[in-house]
Every structure is written in structure tokens, then in C-alpha cells.
Length: 311
Ligand SMILES: [Zn+2]
Image 1 (cartoon, helix red, strand yellow):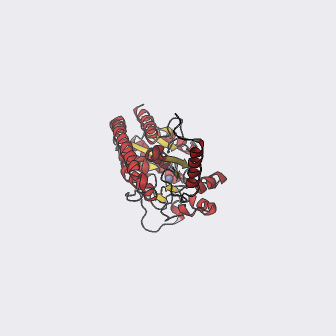
Image 2: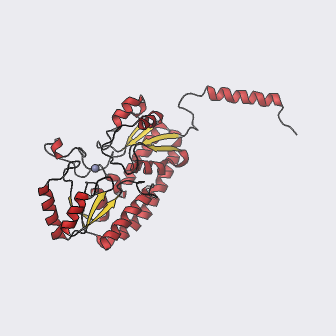
Image 3: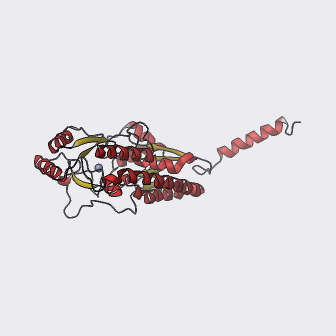
């Protein structure tokens, strides 16, 4: 039996074509989200929220220094295509601003409804007071920006992302919120695993090359003895290193963390002089194979640190 004759099928096909051609631009409820994240941590978190509702690209390569980036033509292409930008805030990713200006995509300009600032509503560590000038270092001008390394910030960060995406796509708001809740549940389960792994080292003092870890230390009860790069983004003075080495010996600091995009020579010299060891750690997801989700990244950080502190 043939329920439809050929002429009817042709007419239906033409109607479908007309309907597609006349759909209002940007409005089809079925279209997939096109999200751009500035940094790999926000990329990993946004992917968990967006799931199969769209695509999430990242404007930097995992493992790159996030503070200061050269503009590449490929970034302009990503910015042109995106309808929503998830950025960190605190000037961590200000390098994206000239890219957006060159891209001619006004939807991603600062303050536009298509821009999500992950930092909104968080309390920020190491906010400077008093006179602020570039002699204090120029990469953390508005406080420490590496907040996603504390999983306790994720309820706020993910709420910001869902609110931003839902503003543009109210039709997806419920599903985005369901994805968010599932992700937060997974992080809560993993968080117990991370806390257990680091529990034997509560109160351990640590030194790092860059000031990447204050939120991570806070999350797991670790103590920051000091930072080699005492002014973020500026090489340390010899006097600072002498003082730091003395303090490390007094406190029996065992580990110096080095973010994987920095050379290890200064950190290795400090560690040697203080009787400690260097642990190179990727500060963001995806820099090491198999760590491109938020949870896999934290699993990697926690197990590498627990092993180094336990040796
Ligand atoms: Zn930094």
C-alpha cells in the first residue's frame, strides 16, 4: 500500500524547504549551542553542563600559560563562530578582548548577554589592597584567578554558566540545569575521594613556582609556605629565594610544585637547597593525556601530590 502519491511527497519536500529557508535567524529551538571557553578548566566544566546540547570549544591549548597569550588566526575563527563566551574574569583572560574586537562578533563583547563571567559571586583570595602598580607583578591584578582548583567553587561557577546559557536559550534551561546537577553530584563523590587521599597530609606546607594553588590548598587543608615567583609574572629576587629556602628548611617542606608551562631550573635549585623535591603539575585539564575532564584532572593532581608527599 502506498499512503502518499509522488506529487504529495514533492509538495511536502517543497514545504519543508520553504520552512527551513524562512526560519528566523538564530531562533530555531533545535539548533545546538555554540560555546567558546577562554581556558581549559572552563572548557571542561562547560562541556559537563552542555553535554549533547551543543559544542564547546576552547580558545587556548591545554597546558599553555593562561595569563598571556598571543593572538592566533584560529582564535578569531573560534570567536566568530561562537554565540556564547565563558570567561574566567579577574583579568585572567583579558587577552581575548582584542580577539573579540578583531572578530566582528558583537555577541561576545564584555557586558553582552552572551558573555558569562565564571567568577561572579565567588569570594576571591589574595585581593590586593593599598597602592597597586605593575611592580607587584602584572598577571593577578584583581586577586588570585585560579579558583576552579577548589571544587567547592563549582556550585557557583556552574550556576553562572547555566544562567548565561539559559538566558540565550530558555528552551534548554531545564536540561542544562539537570546536567549541572548530575555534574555536581559526580564532583561531590569524587571530592570525598580527593579529601581522603590528601587527609594524611593535612597541614603539610607547600611551595609553588607560580601562585596557582591557594584555592586548591584551601580545599584540601594544605598550607602555602610561599611562592617562588613572589610577584606573579615577575622572576623572583635572590633575596626572596634565600628567605624562602630558610623557611622551607625550618618547616620541612618536602615538595615544590611547578606548573607545567614554566621552566623547572629555579624551582629545582630551590628544592635542592632546601632538601625538597620538584613536582611538575599541569595546572589545567587536558595538558596530560586522559585528563581532559574536570574530575580526571583533579584525580591526576590529587594522586600525584599524595604520592609526592607520601614518598
Ligand atoms: Zn596565575
